[in-house]
Image (tube, rainbow over all chains, first blue to last red; front, side):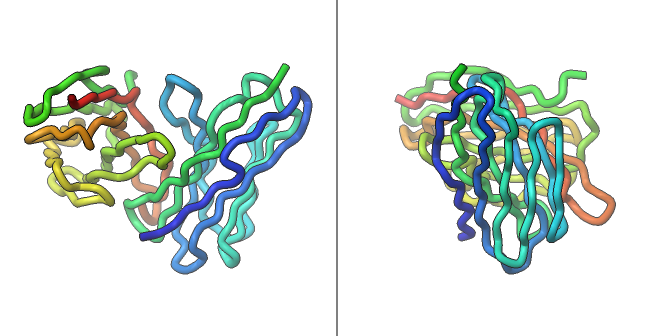
Length: 111
Length: 116
């Protein structure tokens, strides 16, 4: 069984703060890593698909980096806003169709 | 364009009852998935269908069966529901990339199932 670990489990930040969280995964046989944003009472929505070591992706104030050799990915949020409050999931695959999801980082941005 | 739809949204069953959760996607995706979400745990894969006509077990398949009825539809059946199957069930679909199935998954709204 593959282990995908996300840290921290939850955090509270003030509006305007920048923050980051970690997704750790097995470094062998890497295929792809996904980041999803999951708002309460909604469905997960994809943020980034990362496939290459050294990948850096950006969408607005949110960005992500990938290190497949050491088995981690960071998600950064610059200047957090209350609407960024959500659970952020990562999902890892060693190949083809099966993705293993982490338990998520629950972010609360305080106004 | 509805994306991924699931029915029903909510269901309460008694132990031993059976039911089928329905999922459909209108994005012409090849792959479809069923996950369950339990408190303190990540989304866990129950079954998946890489393409029309194929299905495979995921991480937690016991107590479930699936049918890929056509490219659009992928149903999940509980033959004899147990309280341990109380969960929120999500269906998802994705398309193949140019060199494999690394593309993001699109999720349905979920079905909240309670087994008494």
